Image (cartoon, rainbow, N blue to C red):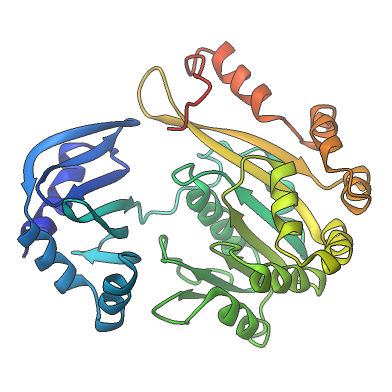
Length: 339
């Protein structure tokens, strides 16, 4: 077992609850622990990096990495899974590995907003979970899919890059596909999924026009579709989706989105005063009034609608954070707080 393999197994026990491991040629290994970067005494050499990459990348992945100098991939060491990104820096090879907690948390433990439970009763439409990297999107979606898996007789297809949580068939049949291993792209897998008798589709990320347009079509044609975007709120999420379309098709996209979108939930994670982390959420539920705003391209008015929509389960991120502060769960965050 390589030095880096051993580190990846030992660091999570040394820093219980760490989220990420940072490795760079010629530097000390570091971890993100309780929201902060903490350095260890373990120095990573160029040889350590080369040995690790040679062991864990297949021929196609190695070629892509050497051609582009960055690569997303998954690593499994003695049943412990990591989501990894390899990239070149001025000192040589570097790696950031996200520790994947393979046990799917129960949806109630995550304290997700009540609107999430309501949307899980839907049988068609688009549900988007947004936020920056490391905000807990994958964990929330895994809990939602697990809830559906336990309670519905359905065929669930997930398309992920990479697979983080592995689901076993419960009441549903579940098919998980990993981009790069089981399919060449999100768009190709989604196109195929529509011929695979799905009821529920999870898309790891809505990356481009082709994927976005097919996701909307799937949601319109009787499928419940879940997806993620790296956006910071409902308004920016809607704009990002519309902007994925050529100008000539944007009116049609607004019309499609206004009928198929069910909910946008945005997440952030904050350090708790007593240790650990807690999620903060913004929720937009697609009421008829919000559907009209999307259709009429009055997106800036959506934030105001969320502020007054508590009866429908809506809440602004600022209000949620203020509530956490007033309850003494977190400190007042700085403007640029992101972890």
